[in-house]
Length: 254
Image (cartoon, rainbow, N blue to C red):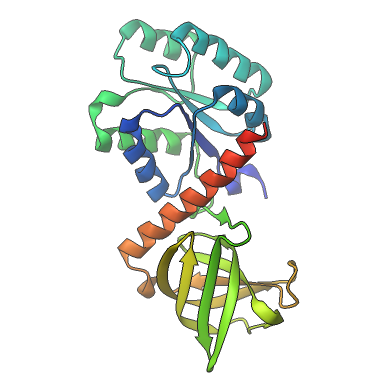
């Protein structure tokens, strides 16, 4: 799939505590967001994601002149990565330097303006930079043991391992090589994802042959009527959490 379809990974480098709620809101808007507290490892890894967007917190990690060097190194090694600035310091000279001289593509954002306004500005900035791509939902690949499902189907209790998850649906491998027809309706599926439990109904919309199980992978779309706003927000939070754990492990090896 091309980058336009997949969207862009968005990193907040040394995010201050006031930004955590903002990041949650962005995840709720189906942006693929990550937190990083190691600028060196992120610089080495970001070449793997050449279309990524980095929001650098000028107030932490490095002193401000060092951030200028850091941004230059990112541009030299990964010229297509977008850069934005976040700071609590409303300094006119700094703003002019990064916007006019350094020409950062993703703005200079002052965090004193409140959670709702900051989230709105960041969301508009990300939209302008086509960060969501053409996809509507962020997907998380589920590591083995992270997420399970059980459901009663025609009197038989099926147990399955989730291979990926979004707020709109999931993919799963059913134990024992069981296969289901496309169009099969599954009611009151009991999901256990990273210790979080929730119920959802859905329908089998596709089957993929890959996977260790003889039954392959079943793609399930959730029935929207079974997912209220609270459950949907919980699913989005779980997608963010699973993706963050994956990225933490990846950056640790960088």
